[in-house]
Length: 397
Ligand code: FAD
Ligand code: DHB
Image 1 (cartoon, rainbow, N blue to C red):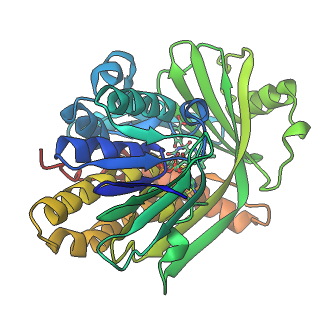
Image 2: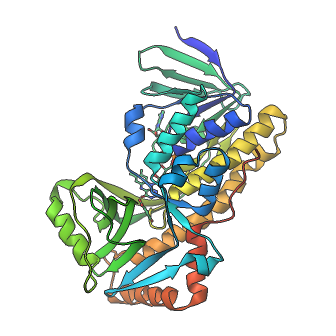
Image 3: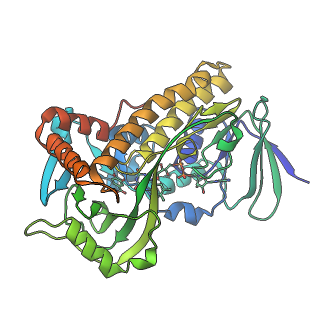
């Protein structure tokens, strides 16, 4: 026997996409339930993205999620590109007429969103099992799950949002999906370290032995990434080997990476993936459930939140005004930005990483492209415009 209940939108996944959707729907007067298979502590600690486009920051501020972001986020005016042992600064504010980016970790956005939903009486079920969705082509789709105390539930909904990431249960429910995909022959080993960053801006470094990225989380915490093999075993990377490799890939005269205790270490595969359409009947996909980009350029999280704004507007129009136009346009509207981000992430990735089978011709092309973006204002402007973000979708408050 299942406990039955009713809501307007059943949301699968309490990542940034599912949580923001629930928050925006509540502001629009639409009820939702979020069902997540992990614990709250796991969701709040999962180390992932860290960089927000200006439009994402403006969105979060506009829906009362800017308080801690404004107090603790680190505004950055540009980035460094490093190659052949030289570091070049790109000044985004001057290149784009004032755009910037903000370092504020995904973990913090997730904590802020969970706190905001719970304070507003929102329902998030963590640690669920047997999560399933059915009847998505009817106007009463059903979300079922077993809660953390073992009780089975069936929630009758008006629509379901599949915000359950790349390995979720929702995407396979869409028949006749078209999938566009590219795997890259490398991965990122990411670390979090208790060490004051030795740089004010992020450094993207192309080194003959592989790419490295210097990022940060706060004035006391550094976040660093190294290109490694896709199947790289973490146990091959004791801390001293990681620091030695980082020092080598970021080396410039008279400067070094600041070292400290490593508090988190993981390897992330790199892939581009786009599934279309993002909607089937009353099931809508958002974020990583529908598309993945390689992390170079930091688009994944921004893209997920952009989908959610379009979806919140579409669901409000559908469920409150009975108007299906935005829901019908949802997939195509998202995909325009998805493909722009997919191209930019692929381009940044290809320019900066060293493929295991790369020959000297490919290396020379990469170096030529890096010289071009660091010497031509037009080329630098294009990178800066893509990096700082596209015209943000607006949530209709
Ligand atoms: P997710 O964050 O994946 O959230 C999906 C949620 O659904 C999760 O909480 C998951 O537990 C839950 N879920 C899954 N299946 C079920 C189920 N059956 N039932 C219920 N719940 C379910 N982007 C960057 O820009 N920079 C980075 O450095 C970066 N690093 C990354 C590292 C990793 C390991 C990964 C996987 C992604 C990384 N990304 C990065 C991408 C970025 O973090 C994602 O784009 C972002 O998390 C997308 O948010 P989302 O809510 O769509 O998906
Ligand atoms: C971060 C991750 C990225 O992929 C990136 O391009 C910039 C920053 C980060 O985790 O801080």
